[in-house]
Image 1: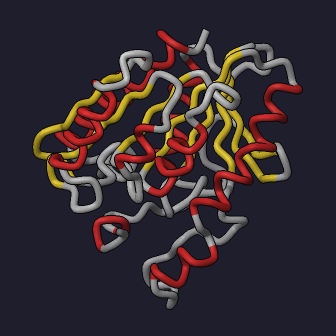
Image 2: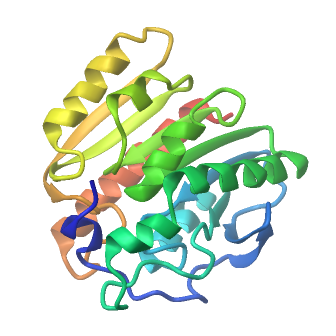
Image 3: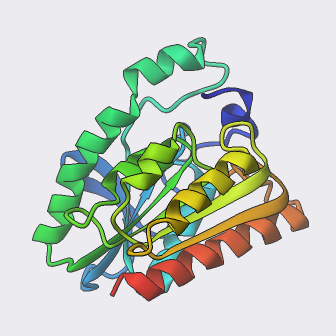
Length: 238
C-alpha cells in the first residue's frame, strides 16, 4: 500500500519554518498558525515526512490567512520517515501506524474544542488521509479533505458522516484514478453526505505538498488543490 511514490521528492525539513510557532496541543508538539481568537479551526495531518515540511507549513499559513486557526501536529514524535535514514518504509510504518494516529488525533481535537473552537475541518495528505477519513464523523469534525490518500478503502469512505472532498492525482499507484472513482460512487450513494471528487491531470501522488517550488506548472497544480481545500472548509466549517 505504500511504496516509492510515498517517498518521492522528500522535503528538506525546517523546524523553524512558517509564520506560526510550535506548542503542545493534546499532548503533541504542534505547529499552530492563525488567530487564536478564531472559533474555526483546521487540522492538517501530514504525509510520512511530518510536520516540519516547508510546503505543508506554507499551506497552513495560507489556510490561517483565510481566517482559520490551523494546527499541524507531529504524529511521528520527532521521527518522520527519512528515505536514506536506514529504516525501510515498511518498518517505519509499523511504529507509526494510522490507527495510532487516529487515537492521538482525538486529544488534539478535544484540546481545540476546550480552547473555544466551535467547528473543525481536517485535511490529510497521503498517510494523513487515512487518519482524517477515520475522523470524518460528526462527533469529531465538521468537514474533511483527503489529498492523494494512502491506505484508504471504499469501506472507509462508506463510513464517512461529514462533507468530504477527495483530491486525487492522475499518476498515483496508491490511490489510482480507478479507485478514486470507486470512492466517488460510494459517496454518490450517500445522499446525506455532501462530496466533491476531483482527479488532477498530469500530476503525481504527493503533488499538493511535495512540489518543486521552482517548477511553475507544479506550483500551479498545487495551488489549485489548495484553493479547492480552502473553498471546502469555507463552505462547511463555520
